[in-house]
Amino acid sequence: MHRALADDPECDLALRFFDSIETVVDDAWRMAVGADFRFSETTGPKPPGTDLMNRYFSRFIRKAHTDENLAATLARVQLMQQRPTELLRPGVVWRVLRPTLPRPGILQSG
Image (cartoon, rainbow, N blue to C red; front, side, top):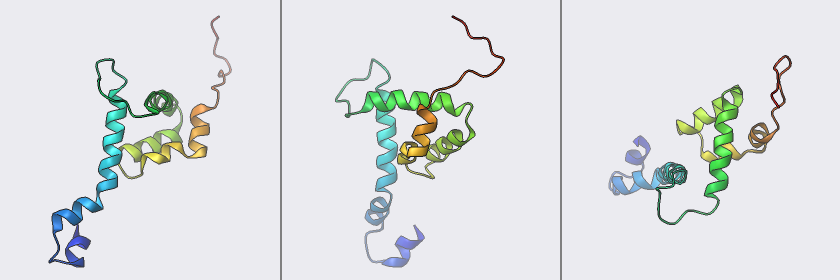
């Protein structure tokens, strides 16, 4: 905001401010709308890839319970310190999608 004032005090401050935060607002809106479609009551056009992203995000959250790196990445995205695209970096995707191996000493049912 201080940069917007310093750059050109004669220019429309509100317009410059909202132009500068457009990406942040768009990211937050997309995350909220995509999450709404987890509920059957949600109506309207569903953005392409929403179901896939919601399944990925559900797995991401489950894995973040035991993976500190995923938990930290998720926190940074939720706090809007990083863009949601951080959730799709190759190393992050691998941590989310890799198989979970049974822990030694834990009895498996079945």
